[in-house]
Image 1 (cartoon, protein in one colour):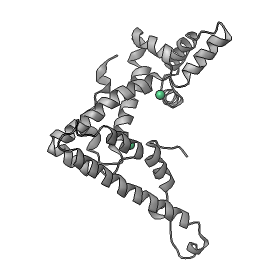
Image 2 (spheres, rainbow, N blue to C red; image 1 turned 90 degrees about the vertical axis):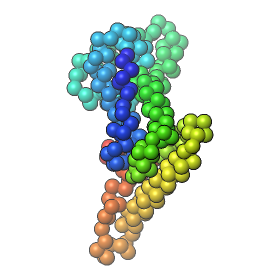
Image 3 (spheres, rainbow, N blue to C red; image 1 turned 90 degrees about the horizontal axis):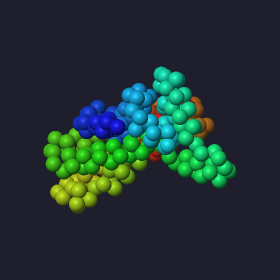
Image 4 (cartoon, protein in one colour; image 1 turned 60 degrees about the horizontal axis):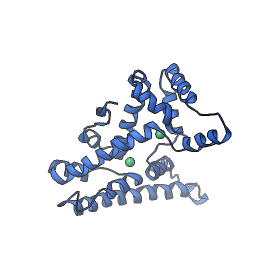
Length: 222
Ligand SMILES: [Zn+2]
Ligand SMILES: [Zn+2]
């Protein structure tokens, strides 16, 4: 598999200043991987061997199904199903148990994601312009707050780990407060007392979607 699929310029994901940049990083990686699986990877026998063995999770199957190319997906499913050892009940059980948390796309994304996150830390440590760009982000979602904090320590960031933690915390905290107050406003709109005052939902209208996105890093379809 070509490794450059997982290479994304960090500034490209931080520059738009719209939502969590790490979500954008993950989404770009995910889209590239799905495009690759449904396209060029069809012709790469070593990748096909691996996808036949590992299969995909529900989330990534559904992203693949939304792509054009039903035949490609059918061919991938065909060779994946052929891989199943169904010669006895215990062998089939073993296959079923292993299939639960096995996904080729998840695995590759995790690999690429780890590298991109450590590049982010390294750039914060060494580039003043990037520090400014990072510190002025509008938000980080909760799962990505954790991932960014996990990789931050004195070893990876000798000089700027304290500043990194402080700014990441500040941005995330103000976002939690904002989302929480919009959710409260949304709830209050159902209170009979607010009915006659001509008040409207305002920014709280999509607060459920925004709160779930903040908590899970994923958009929900309603
Ligand atoms: Zn995120
Ligand atoms: Zn997956």
